[in-house]
Length: 310
Ligand code: PYC
Image 1 (cartoon, rainbow, N blue to C red):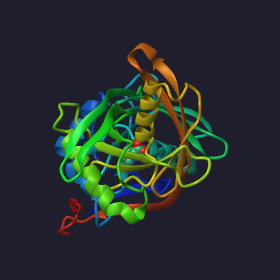
Image 2 (spheres, rainbow, N blue to C red):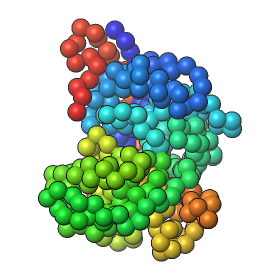
Image 3 (tube, rainbow, N blue to C red):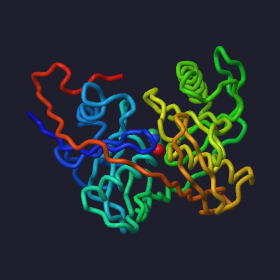
Image 4 (cartoon, protein in one colour):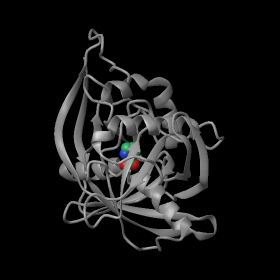
């Protein structure tokens, strides 16, 4: 019987499962190499940790690893129901809140190595966490896709630590009552976007008016394994900031409040990283709550020991 010690949290409703002990040993070296090792040799662990019967489609795993990049205090590899993720904003907020809960992190700044670059997180005295994400940018503007069943759909391709296709104009209300239609539409958008020769778009993000006063926008984000993000998506909000910066519609330092499809919020702003290349450093602030500490038991006699793939 294998045992894996985990701490669960949620950030604006989106779960993060932090693996504290018993996860796969990926050795040393750059995190990109360790992610490749994870994918090649330990994918069953990924599935056992986040998929049913121990998890669900929406759980994001966070494997704590020794950092490689100079100046980083810790390292993390994110993964979901279908594979490793690049960066994860809600997951980084969950990671920091979880380490604080364990008494391993005092308020202040910590630098975290991820497979797509170093990020910096600040734990505030009130428990909120701000993440200075990797450089983010818009790759393509006003791309028209032919989406079967929906005709022409226009959007931007942007990097915010994962690749996004962002759509402003669509016929949907962003509410859970429309979940099936939203999922079907965004899945088709993703498939169409990935015939265009861009880097593989793994997330699709729709925008609409906020439901609550004080927010600037509401979003619906479809994740790579077809689950929707309950949080406003940290990397998705970063991609949005990159597009707003490229449009010139949000100045550096100005606040942007992003609401999720379930009404949770991140506040965000950006600073320029390289204005000539249109690259920004987004800062995303949110709060996570620890909700379970447990030991996952992996019994090889269990036919679903290694999880049920989605
Ligand atoms: O917050 O960046 C994020 C994220 C990515 C996938 C789910 N959440």
